Length: 368
Image: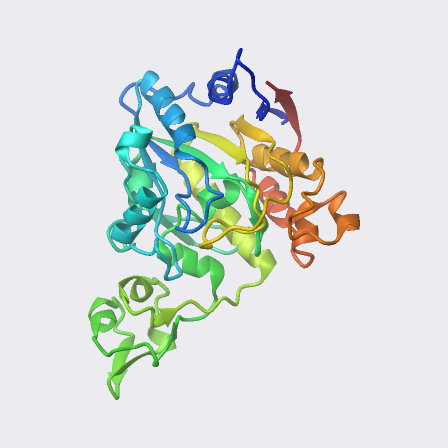
């Protein structure tokens, strides 16, 4: 079914600034129609790796928070720990990174709660019957919320072509166990040059799959459960994911996680995509390259397939930023993301999401 996607265009005036227009598209879209008083509202976003400056500005989150409160909801900002050993791999460091990037109670008007606990092992599991998964696990705090609002910075991505609402929920809300299952089909790799033999991973492993040999940790693959908890507890960065999953499987797995999480929430889900500072790569990097196209605005809708499809289309309608990394202008005229990542077919995630019943790729764009 064709749904409406609302665009708050980047141009503003003294009559209506962008924050006021953001409020208007939220009202027009009806994304909060199912929100009731006292609902706990998880505002799922990416706080940005310190050093990256392309993430969504906190001032927009403050407006969104105020609108949730106006509806009687109890909002909190959230994201789950990363699988890689960066600044957001565990809750304490994750919160520090968020604060460095301007997200705190005084700036946004809501608390930050890391969705999968102190070290990334607090998650809710669902039994499913999908092509790739029979079980999914995602952040328990996100599961326990009554309403889920995806607030995604739309940008390029080196494995999915682009990252929007599907990635924000499917990958971003997944536990470390889920992220590991999406990225890899083998056990984590142990770097003996970094291992100090502290034994913490051994004590933490629920399967007894890790042991010390010559004061260095190693894993027995046949015993590994794939939970990723060893990655979470290793403070030395000596345990790492093997990034061996195919592009098509990665995207399909991400969609399956989105499907399970969304279906848990029923009708209590909404989506905002920010088409600003559209960098070629994910906000997980501690830097960002020049935007690939000019700023476009903010999209709002009730369907994640349609809002991501509209985002791709709007980006592809823009001229290439001459300062960006996109060199193949011939391809970029019709497809900015394939120009940035020639070997990535970004349509896989949208086609599979549609096939999984998450929505049609057809939509009606309403410009505001």
